[in-house]
Image 1 (cartoon, rainbow, N blue to C red):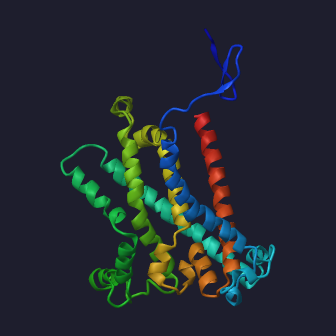
Image 2: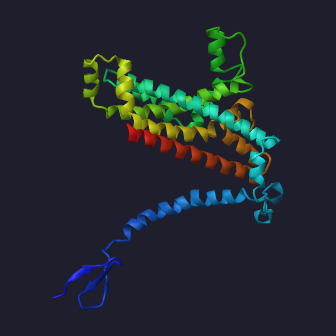
Image 3: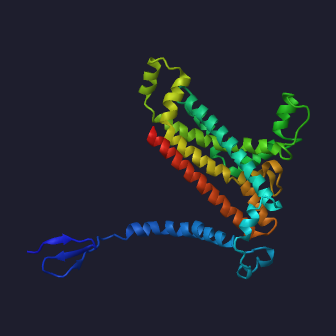
Length: 323
């Protein structure tokens, strides 16, 4: 009679006998086979383009080397120095675009969160017609991005747009019909359109989080004399801390990298108020044909987002442990 023992090297030893390799179970390869296409797709779609983009940031890839990337000279950190030279024209314009994007992100995310929270709280309790309101609120999120933004582009036209027709012709709030897609109003326009697209996502996530809060907490708070606003600050917000952490982070990343909204609204032109950083990098790459410089800006943007994301997660985790 032999005794079978397990060893760290996954071999089966028999007392007094030679080690034998354990037989694998039938079908052991199936999980790897199922994961294989996804891993291959991830490598082809994300990993390889990222590596190529980082490599492009270290070469002088201009229009003279588009036909033969291998002949582009090695530039070292020159593209990064040009991007971070804020006294130069390119660095100064990149810094200005970065500041506009920060302001745009704060306003769009903040406005979306406020609207989403207000709608989720308003629809928290059951009433007749609640399902209809929920469906209507999710329409902007369900629409294709380009369809919604193109509709806004028509509405923001100066002469024939619905916005000027409402504000000037019907409500008489403004004297003259302003430009919404040119000049200083472009910043207001892009914030409104981005918030219109984003707030249903905040509403959906916060509404799902509110469903997990026990009703007993609100009843206990009401018995203690807490008014609705006090219940919201002392019950709703603490219970939604984990949801808010994810929602704000996702909306921040989406908004800071937003390219569709400015591109569809303004085309290849670059108004000062709508010069978001992703749009700015696109124009640097494809209008000036300087792909090396555009890649360096993209790498700097990724590094910034990684730093902000890491700091945000560390800060929120510390607060969660202290709570």
